[in-house]
View 1 (tube, rainbow, N blue to C red):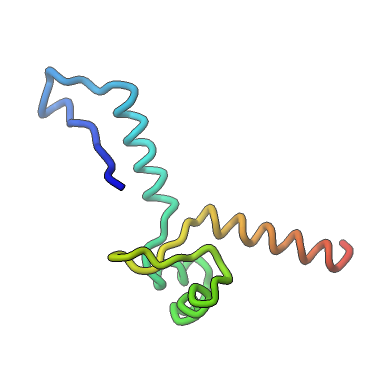
View 2: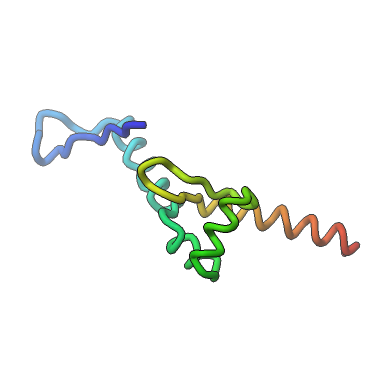
Length: 96
């Protein structure tokens, strides 16, 4: 997937920023803050060792995937949703 970034208006004053270019920039920013690249980054967020992340990814137990050319990738929002779901299941199971 290619992301087209807006031209810098200071470099090209004849081309102003449109609403579409602002949306592309905002999308890129939200992706940058949501995506975790590599087992080390994912492990840091989850508070475990990188080897555990590889193990979880291999078993497909969490929303972590191997992106060709990048390595392991996860979204913070997907991990949060996963843990909320697991918490709800545990509460229902324990009758709370």
